[in-house]
Amino acid sequence: MTYTMEYNYPGLEINPFEFSDDYSFSDYLDSSLIQISDSLSGFLAMNPGSPYSKMLNTKLFLGGYYQVASYVGFGLISRTDFLKGYIAEQVTATANFSLLRLVNLALSYSYMNSNFKNIGAGLSFNVGPMSLYMISDNVLNVLFWPHEARSVSVWVGLNLVFGYKEKVDLPLVQ
Image (cartoon, rainbow, N blue to C red; front, side, top):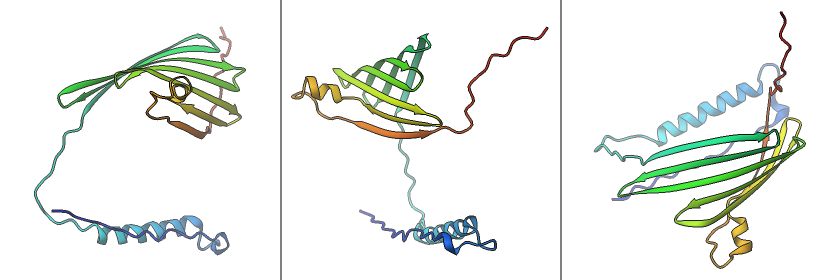
């Protein structure tokens, strides 16, 4: 028995010239979300049937980080997946380097999927409240062992940090 569901989401069209003191963006967003929830409530009508349950796999994460100096740190993290019939273990060691608090470099070495050739690298730039980063978990394997590499993952992103103030040590007043 197969069930198929399809929902057509028409999207939201936002025209900033339509807003006024009487009808603001938050009013528009509220009415749009109400329309979407109304259409979904009619679409997702649930019929009583037999209950279904599926047990999730247990995962255990253990990790630690040691800051050797203000610009160098080392970390170790373990991930254990308790699967049906066996246990899968992953261990990653990291080295992190900070250059003038503007540039951060990271290297990682992982044992996962019964493979010891998992080398990762990362680079980030901190500019004011913005952090740009690029990381990969397997790109060095393609360079050194291309015939053995099964996949490469590269992540590129941007973080915005709001309200961060650096900790300032104040002198003790006696």
